[in-house]
Length: 184
Image (cartoon, rainbow, N blue to C red; front, side, top):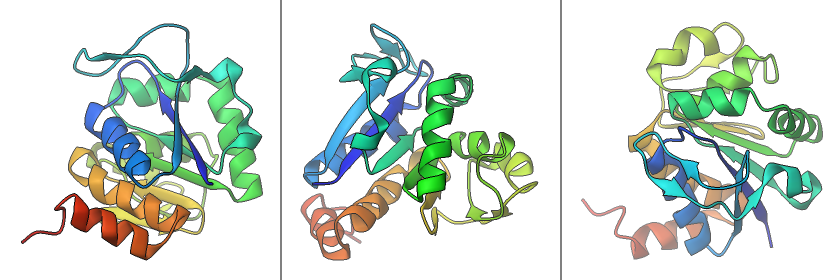
């Protein structure tokens, strides 16, 4: 079974984190939330959550994907964490999945961790991303093992794309239908 690590830092964007966690778990993908510190993690709008584990307690070899939710403050806090940076560098070398949404893709671009790939992000961070990557205006961009998305409204499609990559197109489509996502 595939296993995903979702990083929760103070200031995380609720929709981007919780939607991804919910959809991955509905798809029966082992999804572990991980805080950068002990105790509760406070979201951008004051929602406090208890992560499953702390960054100091994980073995990154146990996971197939890392997910970085956005939120300006959340992304800034992730950016300042050396353990997350080390995981992202390792996953990039090993071509393991790295998924980032909203403000989080700028972390990958500005740090030089990810270069010369297609990427999207929240429009306010476009200038940073396009300096080192081929910025795309799309809900979700997949470039080999790098998956990026634009913001809160794109979180469901981002999560379904992760299901497609980790399981199958069919599993993602069945889940879309079960959740009434594709109703017109």
